[in-house]
Amino acid sequence: MRRAHTVEQVRAAEVDLMARLPEGTLMQRAATGLAVAISNFLGHTYGARVVLLIGSGDNGGDALYAGVRLARRGARVTAVLLSDKAHAAGLEALLTVGGRVGSTDDIAGADVVVDGIVGIGGRPGLREDALAAVELAGQYGVPIVAVDTPSGVDVDTGETPEPHVQAALTVTFGTHKICHLIDPAATACGPVHLVEIGLDLPPAAVESLQASDVRELYPVPDGKSDKYSRGVLGLMAGSAQYPGAAVIATAGALGGPLGMIRYVGPDAVAAEVRAAHPEVVAGEGRVQAWAVGSGLGDELDVSRVRDLLDAEEPIVLDADGLRALEDSGDHTGVLATPHAGELARLLGVDRATVEAARLEHARLAAERFDATVLLKGSTTVIVAPDGQVRVNTNATPWLATAGAGDVLAGLCGALLAAGLTALDAASVGAYLHAAAANLASASGPITALSVAAALPEATRQILG
Picture (cartoon, helix red, strand yellow):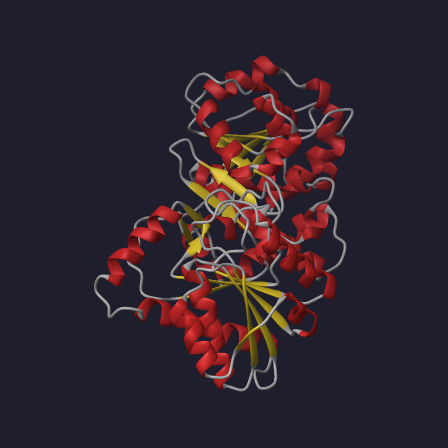
């Protein structure tokens, strides 16, 4: 599990650890890891031209001491001081080993710029002089390595309301921070390299499943399993207007661990589903979970869906099915899977407002509707009614294609039917959906059906 902590949690852990270590030890650990990461990023150290943008925080000290290590290995290191309160001991150490203090003019010839402007306690945005330096790096095409987090982002929310650093690499210490996992800030981080420094941390505010976690959670059948015990999913999707949604959602569900699907919908659509997937049973019957909404369009029966919401079986609500969701009642077995526009309509705000503060609005919806909310996007944000947050970060941009959400809804329904909780079904489903897309894409275009077709192989690879 990849875990991300809040600024307050990290600060408390740092204070506790520093009280037990000789003075300066923690900063030296961070600086060593940062220097190694910069060397690896560059592919060499000797002769490399490194410019450090130094603010007044401790991460400016981290950058200066990393500069000391790089200078000792033959790099030409220049510090650009953006504060008159730069870390004095770190600056003296850099000058002692041949580093120098320069100006933003040095950025033009640099191989890398190191962002040590503000630390995790900084507020969104950059001061004018810092912004000018960052823009200069962009103008000359010099990559930026951020220390801990890109300066200017909101660390605890992943929001980017003001100008900020766009990093080619972020080197963080002790644990991931929330901005590393949640867009739009996650995009500003680039790849994130974690340096362990020995922090003793509490339970994380945000988690992100890895392959080993998916392997542990996935409902694998055993010798006593039959098609009913593996899970039966009721699927209510598709319409005369959007018949393909039913076919695609069925394909997604069949790529999961369930034993059987009962399709409930118009006869003409049912015929198309059975033509594509002859193993599907058409008509009502006992199920362990429902997936409802993909492509229902104007044929949505709100009262019927609300009856399902009041029943005991867990349910995935996708697309048009979200219109049946109310902000009353017990929906703890409900998994809602909106994209930003759908979530905006549910909450009565603009789509841009949701996109700018994805975690905030996913949390708001989970609390208001007492449901698990899976907010689709480049990073998928999942929030349970009790406030647990998980994020999925392994998707390819090629997954932004028509019908991909129908595949995800079917897959999450299959996982619910197989016995996972709404939070686990959403988390495992999002991970496998992205893994299948990566497999199908191979860095090229994909279709929703190709993602569904890749689900079994992606799952086999993860289960080992």
